Structures are given as C-alpha cells and as structure tokens.
Length: 113
Image (tube, rainbow, N blue to C red; front, top):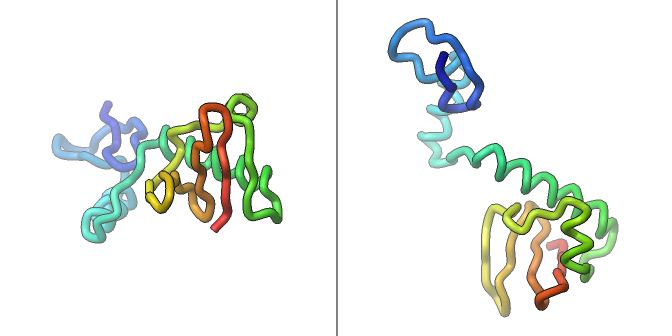
C-alpha cells in the first residue's frame, strides 16, 4: 500500500514505480509542476475554507468588522488559516477576498477587499 503524492489517498500500485493512484492524479500533479502551482496541505486547505466560510457569514454585506479573538476561536477561526501575507500599515493575512489583522491582543479586524 502506498500514499498518492497528489491526493494523499492510499492505493495499491500497479507497478513498483507508481507514485499516483490514478492517471488523473498524475496529470494534475504534472500540470501543477509545470505551472508552478503547488498544492496546499489538506489541513491548511481546511483551515482556509473554515475561515472563509466564517468571514462570509460574519460580514455578510458589510466590508469590515471587528471581533473578539476568543469568540472567533470558539466559532472555528484558525489563526493559521490564510494563504498570503501582505503589509500595508499592518500585517494582513489573506483568505480569498477577505483579510484579517490582529488589532490588539484580543481583537481581530476582518475586511472584505
């Protein structure tokens, strides 16, 4: 039994050199290598999607909101659930069209770009 290098699922190899569970996983891995788009770990993807869904639900039609860190954490917020960092006047942690900043020790500002 091996683990597919693309989808990370277990599989029984057809031959000794098999690295992927299927032709489609092999093709997708090749495409990502050629385009320089590398897969994010499954835990990171889950954290990013959890934050995205939470931000979308909390902000609704608003473009900005300030929230208590502990309250967000109790709703599933993951402070490592972002895919890019930028710095304007303070560090911004990006989650799709949203970003969040740590206002102070207890508050987090979430903005929609």
